[in-house]
Image (cartoon, rainbow, N blue to C red):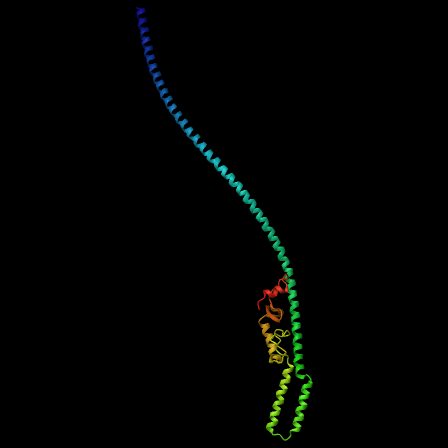
Length: 280
């Protein structure tokens, strides 16, 4: 009996153990299934990560190649910019040298300008002195023409006229008046003979603003002379008379140029250059 009870107890224990084993197997299968599913999901995730990694690596390689290309282009641009910078620096240095030279040249211009101004003032003083002297001489000439002594032909003419008037005492008043008219005409002819003939050439001593000295009204009128010179001063003109010859070289003439008082003459110009540049 005891053995039977023991066998029953052992069988019950075996059943319980079997049930526990079955229960443990189910749990193990369940855990195995869970592990398998988790492993599959992990493999799937791993595959996705690999694909993503490959995609990222390809993109990185592509970006690296593009970046390398941009780096090469930037290097070329840098080289070009360096060349341009060197050229600009050379131009800047040249411009600086030109500026320094221009400054030095302008400084020399100041001294030359002062020298020219002093020379112009000196020439203006000389011109005014010459003008005053010529005016004095022209006045002396006009006075000499009025008070000059009679020449031999005039004396003979006057003596002959007095002799003829003494011989012809019975002539009528009409004849005496006609003889007086004839004497006056002769005197006019003699005075005209004393005046220099007009050869068609300009008088070389006819200076600007002074009038002539050839017996014309301009030479006998001091008012017209002074007024013409005043007009020249009012017009702010400086008239210069230059001797020259025409193309044939046979007829010497004179020509006049008018310069303003503020006209600037370059020291490097010769007198011929000034005459050629001026306008009559």
